[in-house]
Length: 111
Image (cartoon, rainbow, N blue to C red; front, side, top):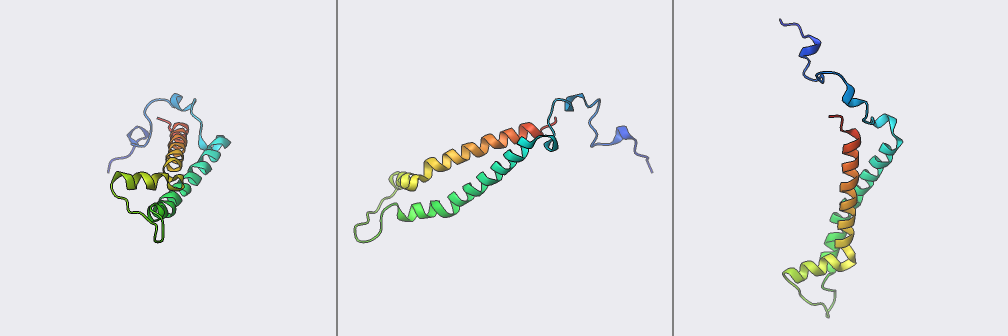
């Protein structure tokens, strides 16, 4: 049986740990926890927008009752995106989510 030396450890970073000195660990930065909370909140908002608001926008885009109109194709998609401002809101929340995710990756990336 071969003995495992520290240099044989596949999880050890070769060389010194100088590259870790300038990075912020999650435990040292209170901003990390704020970003993590915002990230989770935006995920919940996106799920709500896609699960609840999008189907409602699709159903109500043409109106209800005897004066409803029928749309199809790109006009139907356009009316759905602008009904309840679902499209712009979803785009804004998605952009915020991506920015916060990039910040979290930058904070926790040690390579």
